[in-house]
Length: 108
Image: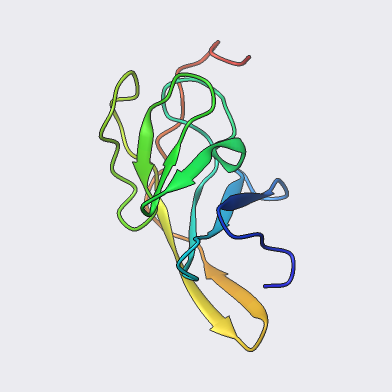
């Protein structure tokens, strides 16, 4: 947990698709797919408030607890991954659901 900053995301690029781990200002830890479902943007670079992250590109917001999107232009949510804390270590159990990736050709 020492690598996490409250209110910010940490991108784990070694996974495909990458995931983002967030430490909220309230002290809870969450992991979701890092890629916005509207366009290829890193959610770890987004703004976190009230257990939601806002995409830095077009302001869609995603729930850190359910992955649901509540603001366009994104129409699909992101996968949520289970997080377990073992001391200061953050253990992430990856979701087996199919990820919702942005359309082809939407890379910025």
